[in-house]
Amino acid sequence: MMVAGLVLALAGGIVWILGRIGFRGLPGDIRYEGENVQVYFPIVTCILLSLILTGLLWLSAFLRDWWHR
Picture 1 (cartoon, rainbow, N blue to C red):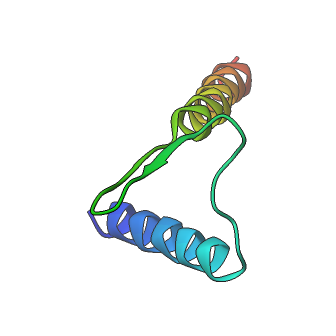
Picture 2 (cartoon, rainbow, N blue to C red):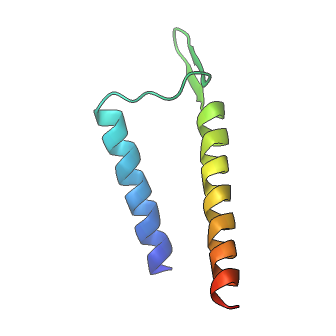
């Protein structure tokens, strides 16, 4: 639980820092700003994060299996 909390806190800190330096998402993210409403759906960011995390999980499983041979 503590590790999960630290990971979430670290991820939140990274997102906060990126926002402070001007990062507003990747090209392809959906953003709509009307008079009284703002909608932001980071579809490209979600796909990229999914690919990166899937690759890291696959790599960790591969290395774990390789280590136990």
